[in-house]
Amino acid sequence: MSSPIKSSPAPLASRDNRWLKLFRMALRGGLPTESGSVGVEGVRLVEEALSSGCKIEAVLFSESGQRHHAKLAPFIDRPELAFPVLTTSDRLFEGVADTEHPQGIAALVVPRPAQLEDLFAVPAHKCSPLIVVLAGVQDPGNVGTIVRTAVAFGATGAVTSATGQSGTANPFSPKALRSSAGAALHLPLVHGAALGILLAQFKLNNISTIATCAHDDTAQSLAAPWEIDWCQPIALLVGNEGAGLPEDIVHSADARIQIPMERRVESLNAAAAAAVLFYEAFRQRRGK
Amino acid sequence: MSSPIKSSPAPLASRDNRWLKLFRMALRGGLPTESGSVGVEGVRLVEEALSSGCKIEAVLFSESGQRHHAKLAPFIDRPELAFPVLTTSDRLFEGVADTEHPQGIAALVVPRPAQLEDLFAVPAHKCSPLIVVLAGVQDPGNVGTIVRTAVAFGATGAVTSATGQSGTANPFSPKALRSSAGAALHLPLVHGAALGILLAQFKLNNISTIATCAHDDTAQSLAAPWEIDWCQPIALLVGNEGAGLPEDIVHSADARIQIPMERRVESLNAAAAAAVLFYEAFRQRRGK
Image (cartoon, rainbow over all chains, first blue to last red; front, top):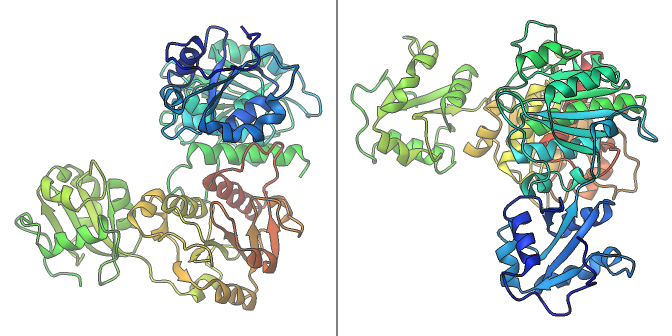
């Protein structure tokens, strides 16, 4: 789908323009385009997309967004690149953007295509797979933040999965991508795996499944984060914000984990809990 | 200021009623009353206030809020208690509440009065003081979340302090109390200490000061969280969301700390960073 046009000589001037329609659907609509690309907007996110190694379908500047051109020039002003760099008016840009005060810069990017098998391989320079499984995490902001924290602390892959009770927000939706600060583009991520198949695959591939439990309502013993050997291949299962993981998943996981506290004021929020667990994994993997 | 009235026989019916004015000032205005009490609303927060051991000035139900009476009865239906339990109409309650859809239950509570000296003592059953110092944390939500995380992982005290660049949000404001889930009522908290005097007092009392650094812009060496001995008496300094701690404070602290990451996607948010640091302190203090 990449176009031979290197950059639009004239600004796109009609809201019915094919490119503007694609950007509108991806950004405002939050839907992937036919070619599977998703929309990102804002200088930082577009920069993350351009530096992620993912395929870029197009870049769009508004007139006032052109002031960010210099910052992105190393990524876009290269003759060997095959995607169009387009411009449009501020007014038309506002019509496709999903944010209230758009920065006037957006891109269509094709997330790294990933298969489950990609997650099981031992990545170069990593001790073993560390996979985050989002099972029924409904809020796109939480999905993004958890992915960002996971990537920050060295996760090697991510999977999203629906549970009987709830789906998981699309990590490539504009809101989730904003919350992940583009981190979802930086690791193999499989969106929408069946939880049962997933668990079976983890077992087959000798990857230990760890269920996170916010409440004490399981009869099985709960390990503290430091009681887990995070250097082994691990898939950490994170459940719904309110209901947690389905009981049968908690039951069939290889271990159950709870963050111990001096005083349970209220459970930590999703971002804080994920940060603690991935920090512990990172600490152990660093041999500390 | 506690009134001899045990509960209002008739609902408070005028918005000019002295109690409704006090609740309005505390909840909507976010200001302490003359007697130093602050406003909390919602079932969970009022329950935290009632169970905190802090002095209660009054409890207020709306008519529809009365449905929560049974849950709070153990705390309020006791003859020895000297505070009034008041009722008013839903409409008048909405006029004093700070939330959009009030639950119809609020209280005025006097936070635990604390002096700096209270923070330096070794608390019973704790290995040594673990104090969080909020220096220029502007967002009330962040202040509340950091206090909540600190309390969850066993902090023994908290101080807020302004820096040359910014003040710290009042931890007893309605928004901060909501974010802290009432945790600010559960530990000695000094609001508004002078940072210079504070650091001098820590030194005099053999409490190590640890400056948190989000960025690498200090010439001094940065320790990883696991390189700090958290079992010693510690004051953890947390700075402004954007600017961090003032340079001279970072320089004069006993140690500087940074959370290492595999990949700096973007710095962790304040809640996540605080969770990681207090978790590490908790882990070490548990001997793990």
